[in-house]
Amino acid sequence: MNSYDVAIIGSGPGGYVAAIRCAQLGMKTAIIEKYSVLGGTCLNVGCIPSKALLDSSHHYEDAIKHFEEHGIDIPGDVKVNLKQMIARKQSVVDQTTGGIDYLMKKNKIDVYQGLGSFKDATHILIKGEKEEEIEAKNIIIATGSKPSNLPFINIDKERIITSTEALKLTEIPKHLIVIGGGVIGLELGQVYKRLGADVTVIEYMDRIIPTMDAGLSKELNKVLKKQKFKINASHKVKSVERKGDEVIVKADNKKGEEVEFKGDYCLVSVGRRPYTEGLNAEAAGVKLTERGQIEVNDNLQTNVSNIYAIGDVVKGAMLAHKASEEGSFVAEVIAGQKPHINYNLIPGVVYTWPEVASVGKTEEQLKEAGVEYKTGQFPMRALGRSRASMDLDGFVKILADKNTDEVLGVHMVGARAADMIAEAVVAMEYKASAEDISRMSHAHPTFAEATKEAALAATEDRALHI
Ligand code: FAD
Ligand code: NAD
Image 1 (cartoon, helix red, strand yellow):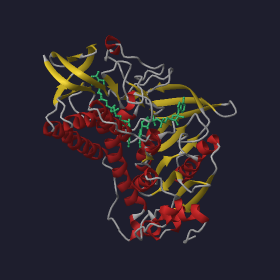
Image 2 (spheres, protein in one colour; image 1 turned 180 degrees about the vertical axis):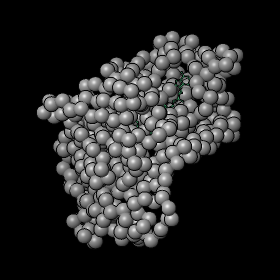
Image 3 (cartoon, rainbow, N blue to C red; image 1 turned 120 degrees about the vertical axis):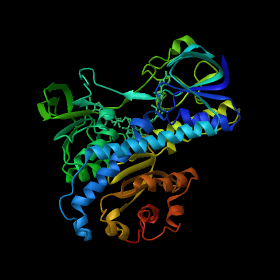
């Protein structure tokens, strides 16, 4: 039987990063993945394929809506070739997952393909083409998550679908009904909206992206409505029924009246749930929380001292970069180091266009905590860079402590906000004040100038270009 210092179950951005970091730290490492392709949700059916389709559909939208104004005439009609779009997406996924195979080899990590299940706290059975058993001093559970569902919905994977199916449709829906106005619903909703579908979003809470700063929800809602999304907040879905090629969704609106939506596809995107099926955690004595997550302490250690858990299967944001941070963290804990993760500074991004990005506390959280804060906000439309590319929507908002000027939260909607948020993360990691950011030179013309201007506005209300 092969024996390891560390065995990792699951090869998503949590598991494969943990494996690399363990190997870097000199540990003999194995990784177990039930699918034949490494990379987990993120690389195969999550971050990477969704961004590939967002990019392709963005190009199409530019071609049909903006090229003429830019002075680019295309002879003949611009058409979508969905088959090619999906094939390109798959080739991006294949290249990316192939990169993980290379990294495993480079770092001399043994890869086992098969379902990993605990035999006891130091032995794992692997059921793949053959059955194997390995032994490990330390085990990291990185089994990720799967889409959640509502109890009354039968996801048939044809017309009533999750994100996984939405990434490989063979036709453009005429009318896509999206249940859940969160990240997946809006990103994939926007893909098909750009390609020509009508998109109706049904959200249970009183606003889309309800966990983000309310200012971001309001701005994104405005922009999406301009893009002809139909958004129904405060709607409680009651039933989803398929009749041939039609899907009928019934919901109660805010007044308690029944509203009916008819479409040809329905995307159920109401969150994701931790995935532990087949893991046989009980055999190792590992405790789960009431919500089905693996219970961990601040060191991401389970109640069994040599078993750790990371990523979507534990508490916290279900984000690839959070999973990866935890992967490195746990490897360093096992190696006896004292690493740290600042969970307050894990940024959140929605890759719609304009993008939405956020780090630190929201206004709602600061109000609830009774923190005295000041706000500096700057609209993207006031930037020369925004006019050059016709990306006028959005703003950057900086929340700073009223007394110390320390930046407590940065929230933005706008072109390339996903990349711009990194500046805010660095600033907050070093406990910058709004004035610190306002005094740093920002290249001109860039979208990032909005961050400097918002910082100026937060400092003493002295934005320059408004
Ligand atoms: P996962 O990536 O889910 O990997 C877990 C792996 O474990 C899987 O490969 C699974 O097969 C394997 N596994 C499970 N049980 C076993 C077992 N018993 N034995 C062997 N193997 C097992 N996050 C972002 O930060 N940015 C984004 O842009 C983004 N976009 C997304 C888009 C979509 C459509 C979706 C669905 C998710 C997106 N996410 C995004 C979320 C991101 O994918 C997850 O947060 C991330 O993948 C979690 O990583 P993980 O390593 O914890 O788990
Ligand atoms: P989410 O939590 O972002 O959104 C789910 C939405 O569904 C919420 O707004 C919620 O209020 C709503 N909802 C819940 N129950 C409902 C009901 N009965 N009727 C109507 N609406 C209901 O979840 P998601 O969009 O499914 O994404 C799952 C996870 O994947 C998220 O945790 C997210 O972090 C991650 N993800 C991240 C990215 C990114 O970082 N860009 C992209 C996609 C997914």
